[in-house]
Length: 96
View (cartoon, rainbow, N blue to C red):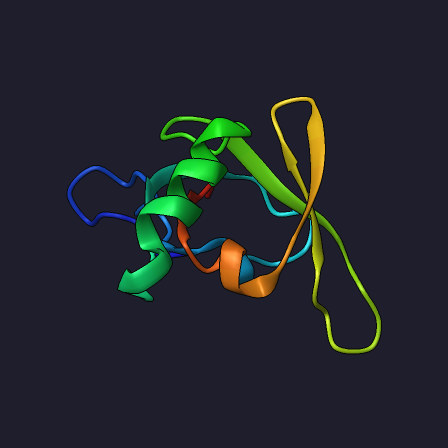
């Protein structure tokens, strides 16, 4: 991990999407954005309704075998199975 030369504090990890997060790595939801505009509002509204809102802590608990889709995701104290296309709509900031 790199750190700031002036303060020595670690740089925050780069934003990514939930589907790209490493298993068991904790992150914070930053935004919900659907690259497939046609279904974007419906999909992001559903994700917000089940708890994927900015500021919430998330982690991937498991991936199905062999393709890794769907994912078992922990948000708060709840667990959900999300398809990869849904997890790709959740922008996260991994914890350092």
